[in-house]
Length: 185
Length: 185
DNA sequence: ACAGCCATGTAACTCGTTACATGATTAC
DNA sequence: GTAATCATGTAACGAGTTACATGGCTGT
Image 1 (cartoon, each protein chain N blue to C red):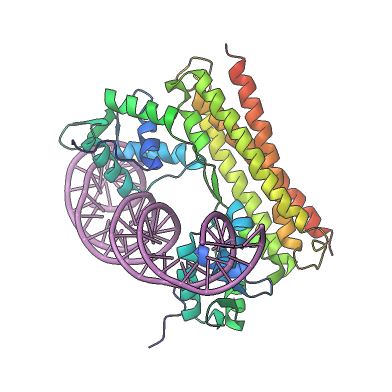
Image 2 (cartoon, chains in turn purple, cyan, green, orange):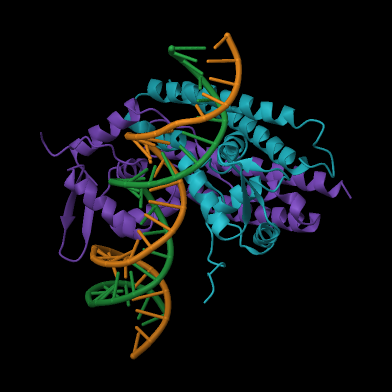
């Protein structure tokens, strides 16, 4: 009987647990910052309020330990947290990625508006894309030196490279679409 | 006063409205099928139960009209539905895409498991990717002949091309990652 | 006749968000 | 001193899911 520890957690819980698996101890606030810097590019950065409630849950499950100085509380993985996370990594079926792409959704409905509206939509998306890529490149640069085989941030660096390449290709494809739409005049 | 018609709808409502904007009349069941075929690649395909409750809401708002033969009910856009959708397209700020990528999330934590686990993860993802691309290519092929400038499915075809290219690039990048991980032995 | 698909819903639940509230510390 | 940032929560809500329930129609 027990505390039904094995109740399935949502993926976001494991994601936060994962952000704590790099050997340091973080406050909820710091954890949110790390999520903003990295997790948001290929998962989601939970709201502050959710970060705190997830930490509560993980703590109840003894997957993290809390150390507080009265004013702030830092969380780090417990042994159980590490094994739970590792087991999840190895044994849980991996869902196919989900993309929520408001630009693609609008392009689908392009027939309802004039081509200029679509062109502007795509051009604005190019700009947003460049900004995001710049953010991700900053992250990637900050990993230089700790991104070699065996280094602590080897895998985060691989993921960042993946993301940058994704942004580059997205840019190329939008430019292609813009060309095709311009050609139809 | 007022039925507060202008209450903000979630994007998914507009997405379903959009699927009804191609001139035909669909039952909830058919609408779900269309979402499975197209929308799911760059948005989400809502659960059946949600399709029906969204249709109820859209009907309450007079954005769709219902025509039933007693056993089944078909929905089509009203004039108001079309203008609401068009206004949304033109005036609503466009969010940046959100990607939920369980494979990238696991790769980030690669240091916790052995390289074989990661290799298998990526290889399985390649397979899943090919299956999805095959599905999308079927859709694309079915649009041949109605995908020229001015045709009804011109824009859906552009979106499908986008998606196929995205899948191709994702494959290339995963292969690259596999190579880099293999090289580290 | 039986399986599989077409068709429509209800109920319970969880995830995750926004809005709100509070207060300490740090930088200028 | 005052603005920004650090730090931690609560409450209300909505979106969307899964599980369940029902029954007609179609092909073999």
